[in-house]
Amino acid sequence: MADIVLQNVKKNFGDFIAVENSNLKVEDGDFFVMLGPSGCGKTTTLRMIAGLEMPTSGNILLDKENVTSLRASQRDIAFVFQMFALYPHLNVEKNISFPLRMQKMKSSEIKKRVAEVSQLLKIKHLLKHNISNLAGGDRQRVALGRAIVRRPAAFLMDEPLGTLDAEFREEMCLELKKLHNRIHATTVYVTHDQIEAMTMGDKIAVMNQGIILQNGTPNEIYSKPKTKFVGSFIGSPSMNFIPVDVAIKKGASSVVIDSNVFNIPVQHAETIADKNYIGVRPEKMTLTQKKGIAGEVYASEYLGNRNILTINTEVGQFKVRVSKDSNVCLHENVKITFDPHSAIIFDGASDKALPSAYMTI
Image (cartoon, rainbow, N blue to C red; front, side):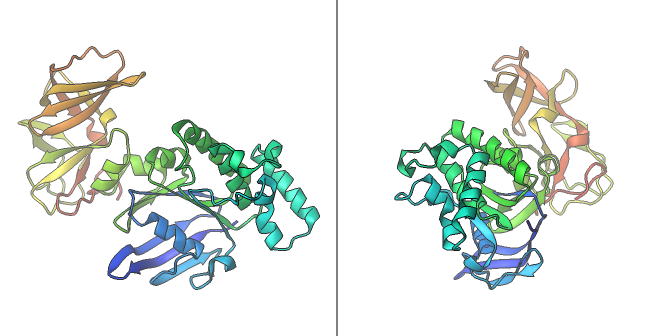
């Protein structure tokens, strides 16, 4: 297997900038997820790694070799598409073995590899079946089998579970992660689904409008978002943003919200804007009988092991996670406070998080 490095990679389509100055390193053996909304540039980035698109500028390295100008067929990479891209006139066995037959590999070696892969993916009993007779999950396994059988340096997957229903998606998420843990293949996986990303990824890169905003472990992305967009895109419910209508100075350790003083981590920089935001996850907000942001319970979502309250206040609407045994009623007047250790200050002008005593940016 191999690592993958992007150095200042940019892709233009005419005047439209699809990917802007991307720098990225996928370590050997990592399951690396590229996450972002539709049109953010993640699939274009994947296609450039594969050699299906040529970058406008920058370099792409595969196992320390510069492959920027090489065609897809010259790169030791396997691509798994969203729509499977299987050959309907071939059975399962012939679909899986197709790339090996194109390489004119000996039939004995082909048979051995197909047997190994079909056993690994639990589709050995389907080898003689027609593709058209298979369920979506089995088709996805065949597509994976055709990629794995080549034993490439890296696997690229473009929303491979996008066409499956919710039950199959959850099952295949677990299967893909288990498969990765067994073969330790360097994998770059594109999705717009944050649950897939957080469940499967060793590392995650969050993209928006052609820019990689942050990459790191799932915990880093969730707990320490570097921009307001990352905080809002990751998490269900997403991060709450409490407006603060004053500039926040370097060294500040408290702010005033709704006539109450709240502690925050000591700030190591100051904001550019006069209107800024405190980012707090729903599970880090609590209801209090003491000082807090006054509001009214607008909605309650019962999720089995917890409740999510939507609370309307004078400074905004916020989501608060409470115990499943909470007896808070709709339209009840409540007060909200938050854990100061988990609060992140976002500059209102740049949307970037400010470094603090509890956060390294």
